[in-house]
Amino acid sequence: MESVFDLENVVEEKERVEILTRELVATKSVNGTSGEIDLVEKLEEILRSFKVFKQHPDWVWTQKIKGDQLGRKNIFAFLGKKNEQKTVLYHSHFDTVGIEDFGSVKEHALDSDYLENYFANYDGDDEIQEDAKTGDWLFGRGALDMKSGDAVNIANLLYFSEHPEEQTGNLLFMGNCVEENDHSGVIAALDELKRLQEEWGLKYSVAINTDFISPKYAGDEKKYIYYGAAGKTLTCFYIKGIETHVGNTYAGIDSTLIASHINSLINNNPEFVEDIPGEEILPSSCLMLRDQKDFYNVQTAKVTEMYFNTFTYKKPVFEIIEQLERAVKEECAKLLEKTIKRENGFLEKLDFPNVNNTRKLSVYSFEEYLNHLSDLGIDYHELINGFVSENQNLDKRNAGFKLIDYLDRQVNDNEAKVVLFLAPPFCPHNSISKDSKVYQELENVLQENAGKIDFTLKQFFPYLSDSSYLMIDESSQEINKMKSNFPLVDQLYPLPYDKMRELNIPAVDIGVYGKGAHTWKERVYKPYSFEILPTLIRKFTQKVWQS
Image 1 (cartoon, rainbow, N blue to C red):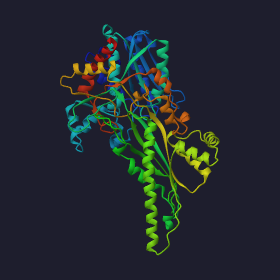
Image 2 (cartoon, one colour; image 1 turned 60 degrees about the vertical axis):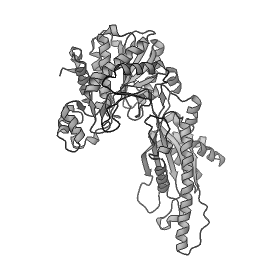
Image 3 (cartoon, helix red, strand yellow; image 1 turned 90 degrees about the horizontal axis):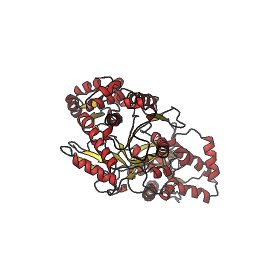
Image 4 (tube, rainbow, N blue to C red; image 1 turned 45 degrees about the horizontal axis):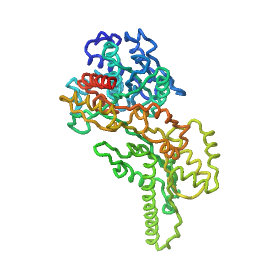
């Protein structure tokens, strides 16, 4: 193949996209490492090799993420005129998850050719072996999520630079770092998007994300196109029991038992999902559950911590919190009743008298817990300020747990309790109305290009996406209600909600197609992703410009 820097001499578009994808996959950019910097430098080098950006070097630039200890950056490239023309935003992220899951072939995780040959001779999975033998799939960490998506956006940028007669509006390419955990890349990019809007007079018509799509079941050949982004919150439970010696086990309430009941209640339970016909609405799933004992002893665990990934779609987050709190209160009441019944059964077998059981198991939202402290005469404001000054470098996911534990130690009661709260990241949900021009243009272009491709429109991109931060459906009042149950939110995860509302960029996902994202079997399907998809995106872009 040609060198990536001779891309303009490559005639076939599918070859261009493949060359770019391979080059990007070969550059390691695992989230949270300096590889993210290496990749943004690679992207800048590629873009600056294009004739148009040699003529206009100021049309390519990077943006440092303020306060980022690694010095990570976003990258932008502009094509058009700095005036009131409609602007289409092509956006994608370039960080990846790690490579440990590649096991014995870890050292080849970025070598697409090696992996293709490896899987062609792999007996552990018939499907991937068959895929590898066809030559239609490109393997490697990031091949699907989502360096092929970066490649498609860059190839289309190059295409329009070579065919200016087909460009009747502005194009802005945005590549973001830090998507795979805290989304701090795109959050920082909102400032840059706002600056361009004000200084260059850009009018953002739509954002096109090329994040991956996958089959939903065996034999599924549909290509899913999304006109909105699901949201996400990290739903956390601080669980304090009443510790006791295992030789007197009925005298306490084991925090791990409480956690087990909450996990059984919430984890993958469809009763707590929204009812949106035709949409892939996913339940909460537990991402962490651990007691806080740091050494072995024969005392039951006093404190257990757990959190869930909870997707949001249309319902405001504060309503989800209220729903979960009601359900957990009911579950904990049943658990307490069962615990007392078991203890009395134990005592009866020994002919011991029943005890006067005064144990409680209280359930609070974070806001309710603070009010509870206030009712006890405790100045929680002063305590929170003290906690913050003493704990400057806590992990974002742990800070809320440590704060509640700190506050509870000041009470020093013997009350079992559950405190429900939120922790970073928080991804707002958003979607586009079917009455909007963007939706109608998207529907039209899919109908015009259907042919042998079964395109299926869905409202909410089912995975997590940087598109969540380009507009927001929840009102200021709803967000404030959510923030009241988000400890230290302004320090841990301050989001520019007003800026999201001012930008209000409708986002669609027209993504590369493949299988195995976030696994060592990750692969992108070349015939669709490298041939059909770039043209589809260009046609939609042109419709937006012309509307």
